[in-house]
Image (cartoon, rainbow, N blue to C red; front, side):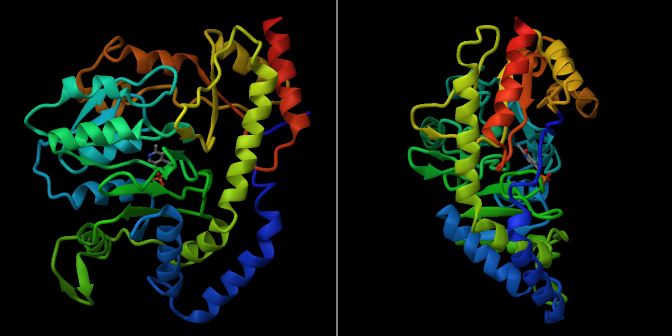
Length: 367
Ligand SMILES: *Cc1c(COP(=O)(O)O)cnc(C)c1O
């Protein structure tokens, strides 16, 4: 028996015809950069996200870079970010010459602990970047409340939470300007690189559009020193097709998560994901915690079950940031999560019998 960590099996075969039609249209359009597909996807994604504007960009990291860029912050200004996140959140801050100020997560939710934010705010703090890790929304009511009180921007990293809500409001629609990724393995995934910036603010949307396109609105006239961070036209077209199915795929993810909860709830050796009362979790990942993580991972691998660790090394201990001079113990909760987390297989189309096989092996391991 082999169960991979992830598969497109339950998503891609069923829409192959539609995807191929889109490719044909793209091919015959003779217009391959920033064309009708981009315009259409930006409208579709804005509507689905419940925001006024979506701007397609090259990938999630570039989206975060541009989202921060359009705030016109100064070198050395501080951005509050969780210590427990994918490196991209951190890179978007440091690539802009800004200073990340790390705040520990809540161990149950994996997300930034709102109660630890205010003590980290200084005169130089300009923004908070909540990251909705694994599809679990951050406590956005508290976070936007703190931001308002201290006059800070909120920039959501919504790369992992397409389809999640907090207080009935979609993630990616709370912040002043937000970014997301359509990396293939994300809940809404392209067949290559793509990302988007979402905002209600027309000025931010316009600025991001200019910056992604060499700082230009009129061909060969450059108002800003921009980038080439445009969304790929073909990916935009394919994403409009996939967007029609995201609600269905999200429900499948939630159903699979429920099967896991049901089968694993009595296993005292592991901690299961927690869903906050005001949240709908879009289960990008199903992450359990156990002190015997490495042994369990190995045991599952021997039985043909794919798992991954998100993430084995927190940003402050990465080689890339050794200049920060951090050592083990500086952000103990992020480190504890890095040492104990294990992501189980989960993809739309996975069967109940597959989850049963996996949970049986996990139970056998602890027995
Ligand atoms: C995937 C991801 C990104 C970056 O997206 P890319 O499209 O790979 O650049 C940013 N933040 C988080 C939390 C992610 O998971």
